[in-house]
Length: 421
Image (cartoon, rainbow, N blue to C red; front, top):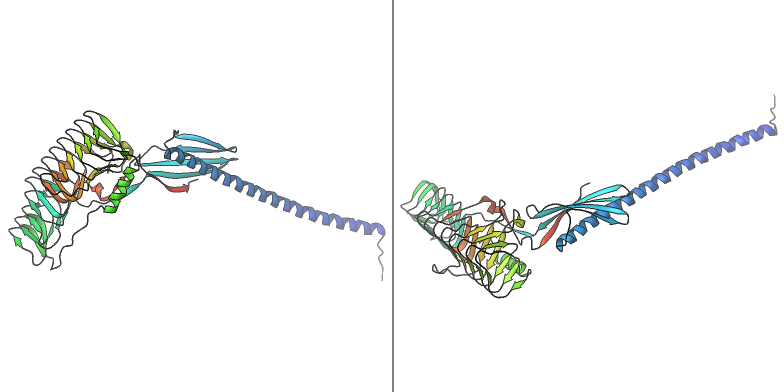
């Protein structure tokens, strides 16, 4: 048997090789850990800078909202510097009662982008009928026309035409003398011409009515409908108008003058004289009467966009010959004149609209609306409606989802705050 004896020199070489191997492994592990640590630090730093970028963008939006809310001067494009970070904000034009604000935050070339909508506060009111009446019903003069559907809790009578469907609620009520272009839902019918189907309650009376077809609804009464605007909503609108300030006494716009007004509360009467222009910039609440004289233009400010506006009063409203009541000029924008007055006296009704006036919406849930010769309006809702000869109510389908706002001078809301990039 041969015995191998290692010299000290060989043992030293093996130990050195072992040490080198160990150190190499340690260096490799150390390098790996260092790389992981550096990567982790980079990731953490990027996250920090990204968060800084986000909050810088948010600060840009808040700065823009502050300027808009307080009616301060602002540029549509603006740069805000915060601790060497920047936010570039852009404010859009007012479109449809809303602005879009975008803000791009930049922190060490890390970019985050946010957007928000800043919109006028609105209340959606649905007018589903060209005309709607309470228990007072509707009377129609010769050649008067309601272009659209009609709902009435009282009788509908006269020599006019309803182009679409008419519904008359409550037993004992019906239609008399009118022409109906579509269907009729009634308890009774006399001397009427119905192109579509006559639907009637079983024990109702049908007397000298022409119809395309007839259907017995059975004994159940046709249910009445409530008015589309609640008393609580009207109170809220009055409060919004009052928040814009109070004018004591009568407010008069001189003949030929052009005035912007609203939101405001007027403790007396509102008088707009001949050929004046009243530009409505917010809700107007008048405790007294409203007199709109001949050839006046009463219109919503263009800032309303596609939204609608309101003038409310507790007294009576009189719109004289040739006056025009207009929306903002955009589609689906309407100006509503609303009276809480309860007069049903034909000689002095809650709302009286004279010859040749053109307007949008009249509303008097407690009183009578008198629509005189040759007027053309978009909708009328009242306890009682009276259309004189040749008066026309021409329903606009946009009224089914009309958004009424306090206007550009009223309250705003922030919506759809989100990150877009």
